[in-house]
Image 1 (spheres, helix red, strand yellow):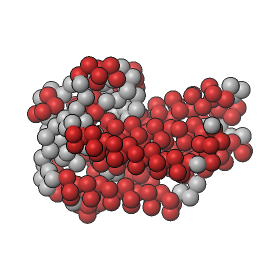
Image 2 (cartoon, helix red, strand yellow; image 1 turned 90 degrees about the vertical axis):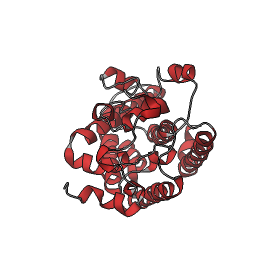
Image 3 (cartoon, helix red, strand yellow; image 1 turned 135 degrees about the vertical axis):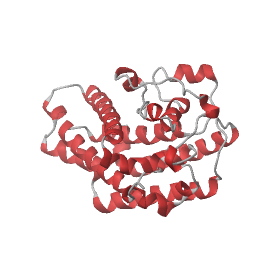
Image 4 (cartoon, one colour; image 1 turned 120 degrees about the vertical axis):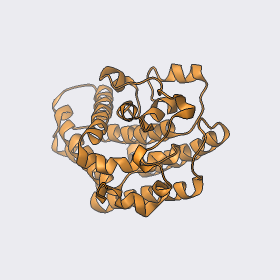
Length: 268
């Protein structure tokens, strides 16, 4: 099974990505949670073009990326987990858990440090939140994020299979919890004991600053609970909660060029 995943990494990642994207698009269309304030067409085109640009930039600048770095670390015997004698399954599990926790902290820092927030706010300016919002990141933020993951994988000595599993989970969970999907309250409550649900993550996209700076997790809700950044419900309720950033409640965030130049604009 491990060999199959590593030998077919590209096909598996693309297959999971397309499957979850289409599934969430269909699900949120049939069971929408929150009324949209903008038409989907221009938003979706801009968000999809951003992820295409991000993918091309990563391929150009990081030919080996995080998975390649894991293979390099294994060959050299570098990294913490390569120095500890653990069963293979436990090494993989530990790597996935540590990687996920570190991405939580990366997300926190991207809100707290102004240079990173200038880039990350492109993601937050989307005035509606749906599955395509999970793809809306500035290319420079993606470059820095990939560099961080590569250093982290090298220092940790994460196995190749663990990195593949982690990146598939991260991508799939992000599309799920950004979706505008209405889940029954009982199901949402049960899932969010461990998983980040759409209702939980939607709060993170509120214009209310305290809510924006909460619910940072992408996959598991445990980090937010453990590090006390968890907010269970938005103050205004999901129906009345305003999505995006208060200073950008215009039609501009749906424009691709606007999103690309936003980090370099001075506040007026």
